[in-house]
Length: 340
Image (tube, rainbow, N blue to C red; front, side, top):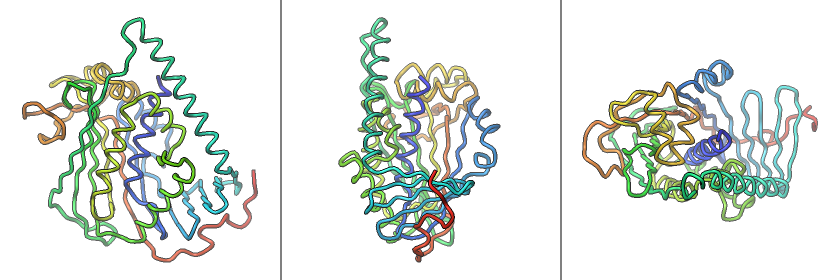
């Protein structure tokens, strides 16, 4: 259960990151994750400064190379050589894998995910027909008219809501999953658009039509939850229609709970209606925060009024700086680093 929950969560987070930036430019962005419930308390104790204050990532793309680094790790992608280098900045070492090796890992992960899905289906067959519920997906985009400057760029607020719920039900029924992306969009930045093109080319080179990053977790999630591929495709399609560059994005993951219910009830509800709600509910529940959802949430299909949401996880990604120039050294393994 925990494995499939992690796979699903990682897949959603990967999707969220593809709506942000990459870069044929040098840029910095800060990402912070806030986990609710018992898991959040444990993560807070073990995560240290990175989890409490966020992680700053520097991304540089020049030609066929992309380097991304934090204060402790780095990754260099070389499209021409078809190699990926993983750097440990603390001990100045690196490992390298070819695209062929990464493809083999992807195939292995896909097979593992399918086996796990088959095993879970077999375990459930004694109590039910073992079929996963068919899921409906709705996407809603609202431009609020609000504006504010971020990193010296004038930005407008856009809120995109992705709702996944069992066919025949609504987004307010227990088991539904709601992902809200609150984005502050600046003008189109050609350099950052070229960055996104680099990422797309990278994953197309690796996986052909299977262009989504996060190979292992994505493979497991899609094998376990047939509706996931449709949901992610819809969100990507809608996200690409947005004009401009997201400078600050707050992603909120929530599950539907019974109106007026307690956190404990939210936990129970989140596992009852769908595999999506159940997976994430099992990871983050016990002390979830019931909240009043926006009256205009997409895909409700029901009567207007206060609706209860159990927040599971929030991620915040902010662009800190954008530089138009990239030096050759920015996309090279630093001097003094040795293969591990």
